[in-house]
Length: 432
Image (cartoon, rainbow, N blue to C red; front, top):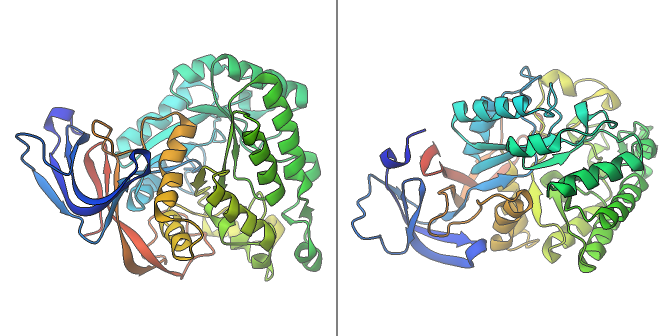
């Protein structure tokens, strides 16, 4: 990446600038110099642009921040790599990715954290932050060296989707994280209640003969976690909630002043258990797709602010991973390419306003991760997404940039697409 004194000075002309962090929504120019936002509206004294980007009829907003993206490296490079998924992220207007710790080897040492950082720098397309393992090897028994991992740059700690041995281990882990002011990212799932299920426990799973995961697997975990959060005072974030009841519990905890936030993954705002009716393995997710009513309650919670971020929950797979019988297929959707257009579809459906959507894709995730990004304030790092909200295109194998093509949205026509992405003032993607 060029050094700050050699970076191009860029003028982004005539776009609709939306920055929820600063309460900005108006047509104006944006000026970038030395990798930062130099000015909004009027050019700073002596500014001479090396490059101009015509943003008329387009939206200029902070670069998107994705709270959960599995990049498959290290350990599963046959599915995807940091380089391939960084390019996919940039093409979708995403400038920061958060990688969970369930890589191979697990992110439980500073060395693995450094490996991911160096690979991201080599790719040069997006910034990657890591979550460290809450327990060694994600084994659920011995606590990880959280102090060293925080010093190495990890943005928080998580045990990903792996269970802890018992609630006492969880209490000690939360106390240790609180000591170092680390946010704990929680996947709310009772491992024993889930009992290796692959679909929501309900009439659809019963009709299809699929082992079900009850709503209580999520709600019981949320109840336990909230009790331990209150006990320890740790700052916590609930990852990818799927049930209306769980969201209601988190909303109550927030009202009572608990230091908790929560997010939802984009597929759960569109899909439900109905979508697996034909044994469609592209809709095999964990946690599973819930009821139509749950889907609506997630949308409501998004509007109300209980869910302060939307993530892709990106999980790219090789084709064979989705070709076995439904319970034997690998769960997950490749979501980087569709994050922004699906979000804009929410706006078209009046499920959320455009500024509120951008907030939940930028400022919201930045605050959860404790990062100084997600804003176009003067002096801020120039991470910028420019998208054309009316551009119609089709998601197919030709337009998808992720190496994983496992998505139930394949073949869908979308309206709205990123045309330019800037990372710290460098143009890393251009559709034009």
